[in-house]
Length: 190
Ligand code: GAR
Image 1 (cartoon, protein in one colour):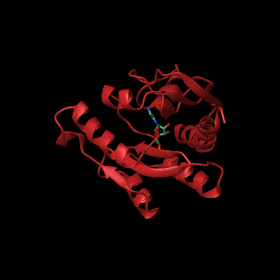
Image 2 (cartoon, rainbow, N blue to C red):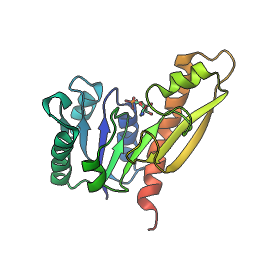
Image 3 (cartoon, rainbow, N blue to C red):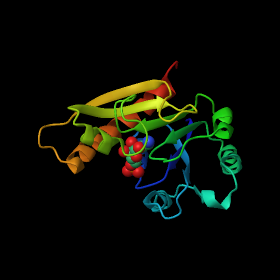
């Protein structure tokens, strides 16, 4: 089984979905590490409750991104990580991680990229008044949400839909699409 690390900064609902898919056998992989850049994030407790090793760091304790990424790489190598799964990791990946894990870092983003990259994609789509948004899973490169697209799924924004309702609809799609897409990636070429 291939070894995955999840990087997350927040609530961890995508972490939960991936963990759950591994439990049910829908995703054949091994989760070996959670990397989190926010010591107060909810996802840390979720991982700890599942017995998953967690590497938490505060970027402010390091003088540069290269410094904290070098420490992350050390942790990833120790755990023999093969794939990095970004799940609400709200930080651009730098050259240290990109060079060590080239082509093996994927991200989920709550819009149909290239529309609405960056922060608060759901709010951006809502405010723009578009009738369709959705979810994108893509390889990570040095840009912001610019890497090659792997999978997308549309979500209709119905008349009178509230912003929280749109967020729920998008997250529902994320929790199904992310584990399924990871499974396809891992079994590709087998
Ligand atoms: C998810 O909706 C994910 O697509 C988004 O953050 C949320 C994290 O939720 N990611 C981005 O916006 C990346 N630019 P979660 O912590 O409950 O999984």
